Image (tube, rainbow, N blue to C red; front, side, top):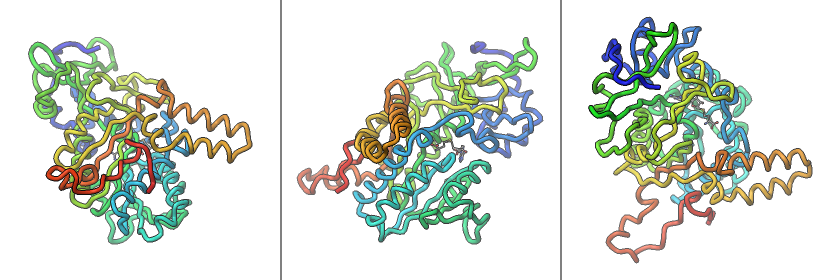
Length: 418
Ligand code: SAH
């Protein structure tokens, strides 16, 4: 419930601090409970132990929520095939980086690497390296164990990476805290359930124009937080609302916008592609901010700093952020993407390969979780950034008959590995 136009907003200057920088948050820590703050700033609320940021401390995957790669190996395998299919369609370059943002437990990368290994004959002349962007020390240790058996080197020389190792299949893996640290070059990017974890701003349209939804101490109830509306426009209302916005309530994730701009710049300059998968909508939903703790919905204002705070990804906003630099495809529903990638066939193969009824049951159950429209099938979406030339021939506009058709992009159309 939002207290309309609350007049007890103590410091509108706090809004200028609502960014992604932990050092800024720590600087203002003593004032945390004295300031009214944006949701983006609130996402860095310290735990009782004083650590800032849910992901730098807890990690969450498996503890508070479960993700598709944790549910079924097929998910990661089909994504691995997507990258190979795009690498082939774009001319089989002799090297590529696979860059994963927020790799969780490392399961998704592990499944992708298994596919790369199974299709080693295709990739034999290609120099593949893995680059993981991860802020959680706890999760990077879990990833290192999963992918390398724990044999990693910290702070390798001459590298912007904070850790380095070699996968069980012999592929070099590097860890970074920020996408900016990942070397430039021909790369395929992956962000699965990453963007939804980034901090958002929330806005509401009123008769007097746009106001930001802020978090404040409830003066009536001790130790209770509440939502309030900013009494006037804030720097965020000035900067983050699109002029053509028609909704009355919007959530904007500027950090996701900056990230998409960075990926689009890299793809425009060096080539490659980005595959983004998350729960989200195409600019239609309004109020999706929520918390998860121990696999249950959790009141975002209760025990701050201890729950996974998340909001649906607005793909229409991402599309705008990539505009001009790359082409975009999607969002397409997860069940359609996985069907196009051949999930039915892969399930049949796995069922045939196993005689054990418990495994059969588990395979069918996890297939249902991923594909059922009422489970993950309809709410999760896939979205891709691709160089313009991958989708439209440069000369096509002038002379539509000039070249053979471009191969369709798998997932968004049916897979054909030719
Ligand atoms: N992609 C994984 C896990 C998703 S959970 C899966 O599908 O299973 C979100 C992941 O992003 C976690 O690994 C978390 O530690 C990481 N993360 C969250 N915020 C981050 C940030 N700002 N920079 C880098 N990694 C981040």
